[in-house]
Image (tube, rainbow, N blue to C red; front, side, top):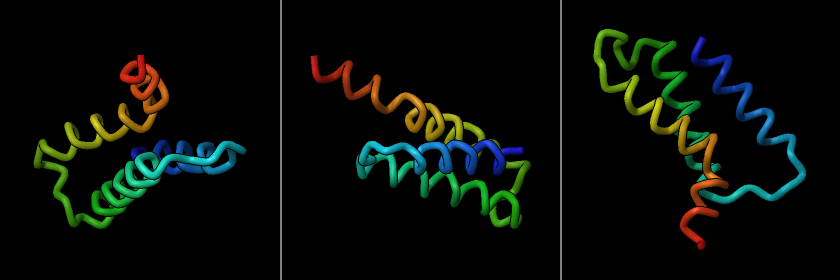
Length: 73
């Protein structure tokens, strides 16, 4: 479930015509790496830190333009 959402967001972001900031590239790679680590049991499901980290990364990835606009005022 995590993997489909992450890769769907990455594909939609990659298909846009606008150039992407380096921070979004890093966040996308981190989300994809976390999803792959969870699927290959490198990170255990029973540890709770992966949920908090993936939620934070996903929020930063999804709301990056709003965060930049908020700080540029």
